[in-house]
Length: 335
Image (cartoon, rainbow, N blue to C red):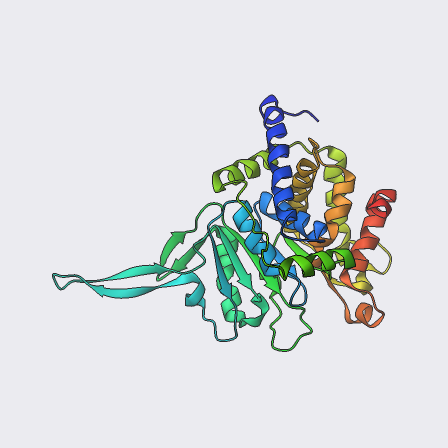
């Protein structure tokens, strides 16, 4: 495994930039280091993230902070049951010119931003959720038979309440697969919540400051794709993803516990994500530890357990942990 000289010369500056980004986010977001890391990994890999957690855990605040710190043009959409696709994508209006002619003019919707914050995405109807599919995958939208390219970079940070709550619509599997990661946002530790309570109820609340800009973020995303990955890590990613497919029978009871497993997009996402995590940690290439650390957020929304497994208290994370132990051994236990 060799590293290009051009890439090697860019890495120190990239590591320094990413350290400043994390430090700035840490001034505003307390006690969610893992969540912040996974969100940054997603954006630096060029993907979209789904933030899942109960209300009040600063999911929207994290998305806003990331937009400011990374210097991205951002827009926010509050998803509701009556939201229509045109409210997100935009629409065409008929205009009349001074000479009496008529023509259609496209009015872009909020999706035309570098960072789209989709708040409570699972409160919108399936039809409106599906409106984001083309935008997330192809970075363009089609309205009135005409294609409209989205800005570069383009990222969606969607927040979601747990599916068990009333008034929500589960996202379809095809759309879930477009998210590079599903990031579970837990309750903060006691000390972090104490600090948060004091700071946010005081006279002055810290505001995030810009550290990067959009062109620099694009440069970092290109650098990530040029980082070398060792054969051992490549094989581990493939073995892990393929072991999660019931038909491969890589593990005992895998057919009983898993209804459907991750597709090729999962291995692509895990490959990119491990590169980013290595760079953020100051390393030139990913390791098996990176694979173990990112397996859950990359795979959990790309798999589903059977009714039998749910009845026995087995969830997707438990299955992923078992897959990691099978493929990565002691490395999975350490992670």
